Length: 331
Image (cartoon, rainbow, N blue to C red; front, top):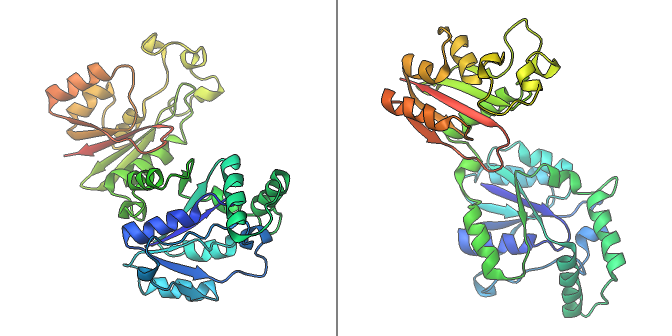
């Protein structure tokens, strides 16, 4: 595993890297700066060099002059834990992303806190501290320079960490809860995999009320997918096809007038089952388990039907999931 750290000036990237080395068994990898590396990226006045708690035990980091050399090195040692803060540009990132053992983490912190860190760093090095305006300009160059700005890298990070404190113990506690070395970040488990497929299906929803996606699975094999919306050959709900949804009718009211078919219903229909109400339908056709991400207004009634029919009901809550997702497991 290789974790790449990027972010704004003095956000705490070095502190996160030090934590991974000292507490999680990672080793540092360094990539030499390129000619396009900005002053704000390499200036001693704005780069936080964190000292290990026990320098005598700190191993010498591997240093590479080219990203291809680094990629070749980690490819042969992919089962070990590595961390680098030297993601200089998108070219470097693109080459690292080719390896399934790599993922990117961005680290940020409030501007006022980062400026205070800058002044403290400059004082410790015997250098004059920049004014707040100078620091902001340097930070803007670091992030938004047309040729070398790193904001585009931050936008592609799989994990985003906000470092709001200089308290070491608080940072370590946050990182422990985040569990960056979790192998599921590199390869999703079955729940995550199928829920991501359900999320993709939900993007096709045309319902004005909410987006819902569903995946029907048997023995870890996808049987069908579905999303909610009006039936085939009817005007889409988001084009005015369902008057109930477009009128903003409250949940549970006027259901008999709704033209939209539920995602679960569509998935079962796609699999060749007859159309009946999906709570009863799920029980009738032999679904053994329903995994969902977000609740709905009629959950109590549906849960009772499932319990009586011997269908297991389980919630899966991925971080920041904006859509309602459903996974149906066939016996």
